[in-house]
Length: 247
Image (cartoon, rainbow, N blue to C red; front, side):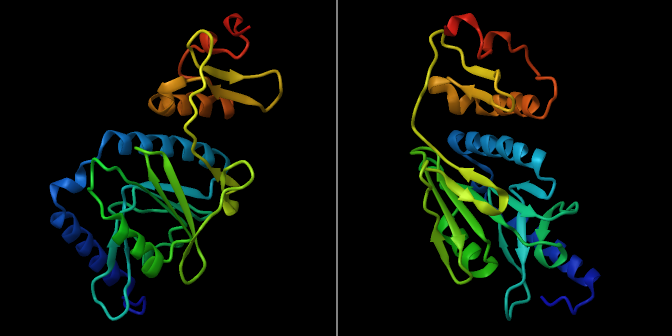
């Protein structure tokens, strides 16, 4: 659809297309495995920390993205698990993110694939991100095996982003790194370490052992409050980096 058409008509057409898409979805689309759901929570909590420092970063969860396709009346459609848009002003998007009507295109899309739930065709979705939308960054993560792959668009296709010397994947435009590891660090008293240290600006969130992925959402809330100077939602004396049980 061309924007030479009056904006109000484009809005009506895209709204109708979004309703048709919703009605066509099978029940399987609304299902997700526990690893997928957990990873979604972790990502959203992590991106909350980015948003606290970058007001131009906007995060959307399971939002239908609609975009024009050449020589077709109906828009292209895809639903990423998470999507990041970078724009200095507030973005209004309710039932769908309609690219011709928005001030910025999707910057980064994230999808989580689980062997126990094939609710999405990530191969088909990747083709849409790569060849139709040409989203700059695409992240594919398999929570079951903790395999993370980050792609960057060259203008014609996706190429894998190689990890840096620390094994992290950099998204330079956001001053952000993505990483995953299978380590399970624990503590002598079995409790995680959460809080500030004697070094200004240095915070600790570690020692969860095998429950790290399960406690990640609440840990992110706690550390988000600490890093931004707010009162944590829980009493943290028992988790202090300076507690005597760690000596």
